[in-house]
Image 1 (cartoon, rainbow, N blue to C red):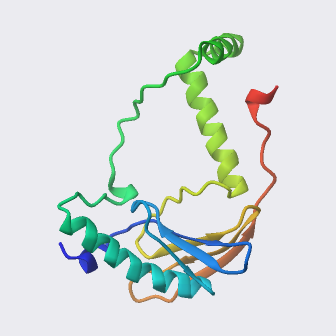
Image 2 (image 1 turned 135 degrees about the vertical axis):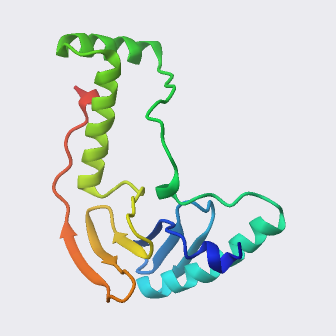
Length: 170
């Protein structure tokens, strides 16, 4: 595949406003593939140029190009190592709630991901279609655009609700 063909795939593009008024954009699946611009639109346009160069470099070295996050398959299984004290606290909390340790940890992860999504402070963006972009700062989503073939972008600005407290700080 050529770099242009790779860039047609649904890679996760994120634009973040910087403190100095500029914008940083990146493709999450391409480590170090970052561009900047004076506007969000300029940062995204610059990102396409940087991503093309990034891909050319990866291909020239014979390295594998990462798949879009959306195309990865996950088994639902992971190995997790905890400090002994954290393992003990989690086991006690699970017993107190009347669930298995596995269920307790899965629920904690799900709860934390929900809190992060609500606060829009987490940089992982899951896209359902290519050419979607989320622009956010640490307090709220500034703009979400969704473009599909033959349509114009839809833009939504959404303030984030307050984040939940961390259950580990009790």
